[in-house]
Image 1 (cartoon, one colour):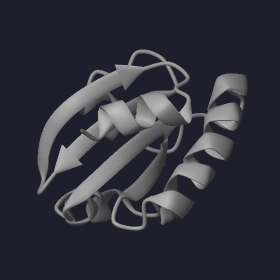
Image 2 (tube, helix red, strand yellow):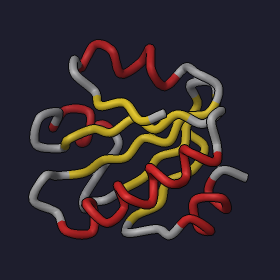
Image 3 (cartoon, helix red, strand yellow):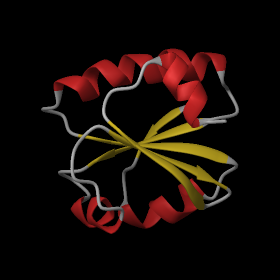
Image 4 (cartoon, one colour):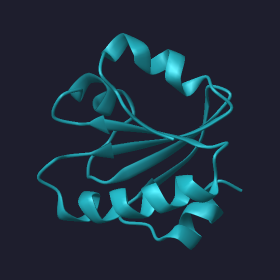
Length: 100
């Protein structure tokens, strides 16, 4: 399932779920738009993994906290703990590698 962060205070609650990929993106970013399509297909096959999309222009404090320097950047959280960080466009196979 894909969710868009609406309120900054919801971030910590969202990342404490079992397995969450946080997608830091921007509306003006071409590779981010391409990644959105891949993430949609990925979540169809992986119902137990949640995707949380965070617009870096709306939530710069969260982006700064995780040192997001370019978009798209993906963070993998497991039970609230940051496990991995990947920068740039990823295909579906690379998303499977990220979640291993």
